[in-house]
Image (cartoon, rainbow, N blue to C red; front, side, top):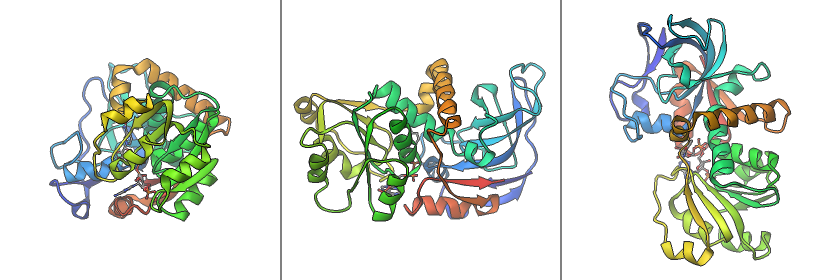
Amino acid sequence: MRAVLCKAYGSIDDLVVEEVGSAPLEAGQVRLKVAACGVNFPDVLITQGKYQFKPEPPFSPGGEVAGTVVEVASDVTEFAVGDPVIATTTWGGFAEEIVTTPDRLLRRPQTMDEVTAAGFAITYGTSYHALVQRAAIQPGETLLVLGASGGVGVAAIQIAKALGAKVIAAASTAEKLAVAQAQGADEVVNYAEEGFRDRLKEITVGRGVDVVYDPVGGDLLQPSLRSMAWNGRYLVVGFASGEIPQVPANLTLLKGCAVVGVFWGQFRRNEPDVDAANFKALFDLHAAGKIKPLVSETYPLEKARDALAALSARSVTGKLVLKV
Ligand SMILES: NC(=O)c1ccc[n+]([C@@H]2O[C@H](COP(=O)([O-])OP(=O)(O)OC[C@H]3O[C@@H](n4cnc5c(N)ncnc54)[C@H](OP(=O)(O)O)[C@@H]3O)[C@@H](O)[C@H]2O)c1
């Protein structure tokens, strides 16, 4: 089978596509034929050796795939050959097949095509968990989404609108804000320009925002935290800017707000039943047309490097998906 390989930690430019042997199937495992694989920021980080998981090279990046079960170990009863599935794999997905375990699989609904499904689990799983379990967002509350045209940002906009919140989308260019508005954002703010806080004050009529969804970090934390309403929740989702900001503790006191960490991967290991209920709700919202994943571009497996380069260059909106 063909696979994208990281042979040593370093640059995404050093990734190669090679023919490799199939991994043997052990007890408790299933083999999937991969149809498509979502491209995510952690795929860049894991290649550079900067992610929280550090697999031994050579390995393939690729944390989420859509595919079909083609082989099951004799002790696996939950899935059968031919089942259409989504798998969250952390790595290994940029390949024609992958061996994984049933706890990493979701049944792919018939209403969802393979490309959409490949880019769905991480972004929508994260944003739903963040907004529902971590922020307990309520209808009518105001949500500020940073990095709003990116993968998790788009999912956050759509889910929050489906849950009845008012959404302010924030991003760095007019083009990205147009994308966020097309996803349902009520208001948009460009944080690369002057007056970010003033605009938020104006939009919320001085009240501030109830929830901040922050996958970017860096310099955006302070002005966003200062723009919170009383009883607000600041969701720490990621650090796409490359900079982990410090939280001034006095601001949380003055605002009467909470700073809340979001770690979807650990949440689903700790609370698999809640995660399963989240995906049931998400698949229902998708079937009802209330959330519509935005796959802005697809690439063939051979062009995985180009997809990761586009993500690193901050030029992507929505999701990129590799067609395998
Ligand atoms: N906590 C969790 O469980 C969890 C789950 C999934 C993802 N994440 C994290 O969330 C973050 C965003 O993921 P994503 O898939 O939405 O990524 P993405 O599609 O690349 O979007 C990230 C956004 O961050 C902004 N950004 C600011 N500085 C950037 C830089 N130097 N390079 C790239 N982007 C930059 C960009 O928007 P502007 O240009 O508009 O600023 C971009 O749209 C990542 O750090 C990821 O690891 C966390």
